[in-house]
Image 1 (cartoon, helix red, strand yellow):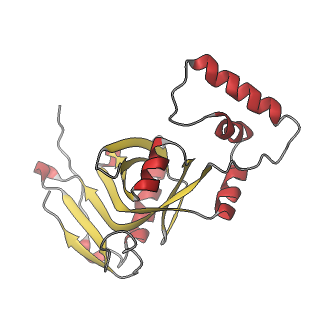
Image 2: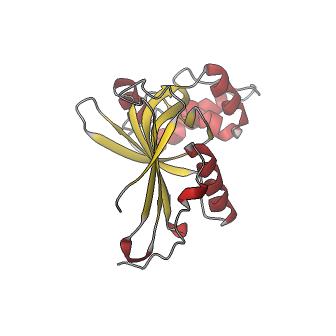
Image 3: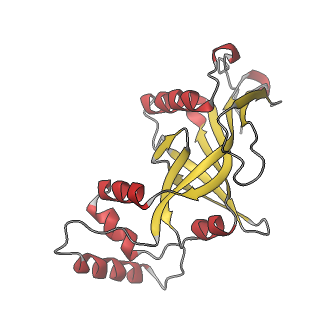
Amino acid sequence: MRRQYRGEGIDVGALPPAPFPLFTAWLAEVAAAELPEPNAMVVATATPDGRPSTRTVLLKEFDERGFVFYTNYGSRKGAELAANPAASLLFPWHALDRQVIVTGYAERVSREQTTAYFRSRPRGSRIGAWASEQSSVVSGREQLEKRYAEAEAGFAHIDDIPVPEFWGGVRVVPDAVEFWQGRENRMHDRLRYLRAGAEGAGGAGGSVWRLERLSP
């Protein structure tokens, strides 16, 4: 299975000095195209000995500090990021022949930021955060439904459901952001922003980026 990509390509001369304005523009184009889940991204983590795992989550916030998603800190990704903060994000915008790949290091956002986001979630999702021990083995669907019912009953008379201590935001602070545009004959455009001085965990503190082109 294959098809010919016929994207117009990336105008290097018009690129901004940092990746975030371009990411903002591309995300807006994906949303305007009415693609399902435009903010969906594949999050890759790994154990300290290098065993990887991936899953799809939703990007909830981003700015020049990085890309934020929310999770149970006791989940597989939460545990792996606690032990090995290196992470990668992939935005698979196939309908537009595009993808964006972010690599960097994860840090937890403040409890204030987590609380503000948690309060914006539907009530059912807030209850679900309490009910699910994410990534743990359960005996069946009935056990999940029982946990949810118990949590729902426990919060029946509480409007402002508190944030679980084991749940919160993760920010992936990028040291590299690659923009990929499909082109004809597999001669794709791959433009990568590298943050100056981004060498190892904690090396993404600078704000100067350099741009390089990669072979497709």
